[in-house]
Image (cartoon, rainbow, N blue to C red):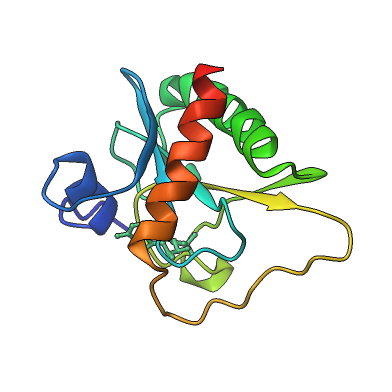
Length: 140
Ligand code: AMP
């Protein structure tokens, strides 16, 4: 399977499509998932192209995992979560729908279930508010 340079996250990286950015460095970008399964659901992606973890250049993974940790801590703080679920899918059979490597960061608390993936976009003002809370936690 090859990498499609027009996948939606590649287009976000090129600035062709907007996102609610929470974090960016030389190697990685993090932004709000537009169909969040929990408030604060964030995605962390490498700037280096790969479909998923299976074809990723191992050299990109160190910086990527460091960003996953940074953003996970900020999301936990921003949403007062008891725990953080990190999810990552490889190929359609495993649930992948966007074919640029990404890690999901999901705040979790006891007794609070994840919302189903309805295909409905969240309110953009709310996503902007959530992104601002995470950026504040990163700065604090
Ligand atoms: P998956 O490939 O199943 O690991 O998940 C892809 C995720 O990307 C889903 O949770 C979608 O809600 C999310 N998504 C799709 N398009 C966008 C977009 N334009 N901006 C942010 N998140 C997106």
